[in-house]
Length: 298
Picture 1 (cartoon, one colour):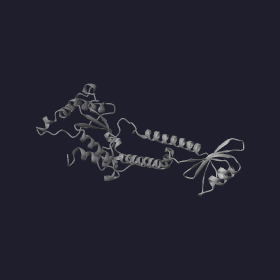
Picture 2 (cartoon, helix red, strand yellow; picture 1 turned 60 degrees about the horizontal axis):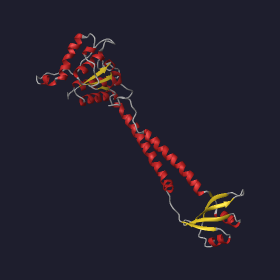
Picture 3 (cartoon, one colour; picture 1 turned 120 degrees about the vertical axis):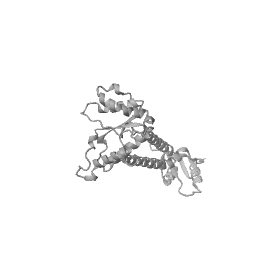
Picture 4 (cartoon, rainbow, N blue to C red; picture 1 turned 90 degrees about the vertical axis):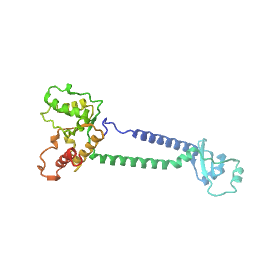
């Protein structure tokens, strides 16, 4: 059964929120990382600035990273960082000879380090999941061609009765038997009676055929499935017959119910009259409709 309320599936909004949060987190991460590390300089440049007495204090961590501040040309402190490319046993002696204060630090791995490492994988999994779900959604929509687009009117929501139909006295008398059968099926089946498989309402446009069909459902207190004859035939071959099968399958699940096919002349005609013969789409739809109403299994 298609979505009768026409509402779009929920859940996409959560993807946008998740993506926005990840983006903001990465922006914050890059800003924080840039502020913490400062300007990256070469080890040779670092030694040169020490000799020029532009560095008075450095922080050396156990992962061979050196950070601190050096005095720029405008006499402002500029944060820097560099990496010792090899083990220099004379580095401490060199720094002390130039009156540089050496502070040892233990390297710590913070939260942003882990975020920086796992973020590419998170984005990969997120995008991969999004693509898979999008493809699955498109494929599921592609398989909906064979599903019936019938609209369902529940018995509780259908308040139309014969009193709402003006005139049509003879038609209402004939349909009263259908109503009685739907209300009391055991009374007829116990006597071996068989109810007609369908009722054909014929009349000019606007004479109340659809209203009369809804009145039968309202009087009987059963569900009402409404579909137009033009909804069966599409550009794809076999869609009409598939939708007929799906329509009657829905009707069997909700039995007792009434299936109303409006403008049935869109598919109803003398069989074998089409140029396509038995392969004509409308004729295949009509044949399937007749099979469902009075076929071998009925």
